[in-house]
Image (cartoon, rainbow, N blue to C red; front, side):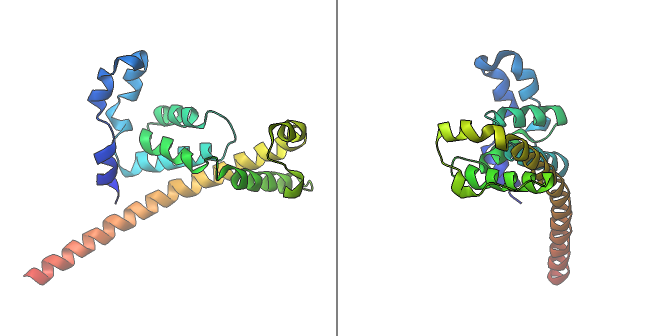
Length: 175
């Protein structure tokens, strides 16, 4: 498991409390449970991070962090997963979300040939694409959140059982 790697690079909650620039946020951000890596808060972090990754808003990291704090998910994992939708991956992710939304609404999706990567083009077509885009984004985000939440639980249990079995086999061969 990458638990040791995450623990190695994650900041210490006590050091976070000592940072003077974060002021009133320290009592929420410095909660040790937000930085600890275990099955439950990691699964919640994946659900939160992948949900907000699929929503086209400018403050994805902030909303993911707030959600992680509210639901007591792992904060660094939740915020890091939002970066799956970066400037390189955003166009295909959001176009897929738009296609899903158009399909759900029963509308015919505009082809990608009609989209131009310019601010003016986006503003001109936003009134036509916002509903399918955000509906598709919400549906894709919910599906990703549910799959990742249960997938992390299943994988974690499998990994623990597999490690346990390996240790038992190792002990039985040593005797």
